[in-house]
Image (cartoon, rainbow, N blue to C red; front, side, top):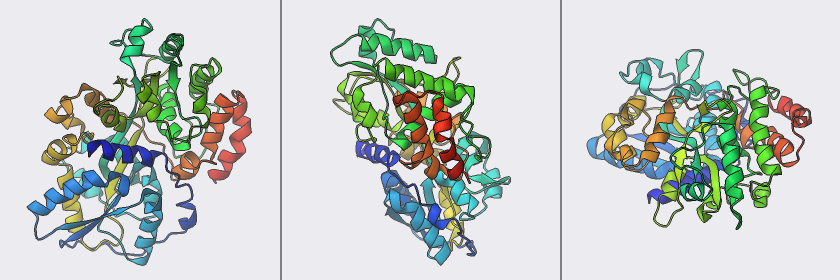
Length: 424
């Protein structure tokens, strides 16, 4: 079941939900949130429903008079259904939403201010900071981390050994990645040093943006109003990928991969390295899985970065039982739930002070992943889907122009107008 949950989570990464907010840009909720304490309703994305079902089952045992009903909504329909629900008054009491969409929800006033409640948590400083930041506006907090996932560099120890590399000393810089990719590809027999899904917008946002961040830069300015395509950190990251592509260190099939084989490509034990989310630890760790270990994604100077994905949870505007909603949210972040339900299921805990729990510690690879929640980032924009998920959007165009088409920094001029149009 755990493997299936992680597979669903992985599939959700490559779903295209590009126009979900475009049709609701004029949203203007007028609902009033009520501090009711009765039974509540929870809406979740279908991909992440299994873990939430486990939480709800335990909550309902402990709170028989305030039971929670869970509704799982297909990922591609979630945002539009949620916006329509808030505007019509048909709204859940608790909403779990994709962390990348948090800023869009907040900017449309679709979530209730929970600042005082969050600030009152003794472990607030231990909550994933990027999840709090992306769920905030004008100093007010509207959501907290719920289910988290981070991107890492996966590598194959067996191939590292065969290529004369030390698996105990994984790549620490971009140059190390390139060197390892060359040596692994040189093994021949259809073995390649690196893999990326060359025609998948969402995959590349999750797995490629950290290479830019690790270089000390960003592709968007603070506030997400302008594309900073000429940032040297962007060039350093794109040039790494372009070099690996031009030197044929990446299999030709990667060019057209829309995400369908992004995860399975590594399972052949013919790929040396791939940047993926921590969800793949559960997939690859299953019986018969490929040889793998994980390490943070490095930049040119040895700094590392990660994209924090997953979900945030909040109280929708107009909720009738906000009292129950907050009690559940707080309960879900408790040590007992995080260690006995979340970590036991193989997921990352949302609190950095709980990383060393026995269930997480049972797999050092999960510890490596979980420690990254303290520094992992997420794009600071309310237009994430339009920019980074839409298969016709500017981010995928930019990567393909620079890397696949070989235009190098000519990709800046080639895609600048597309970025400007989406950022209006």
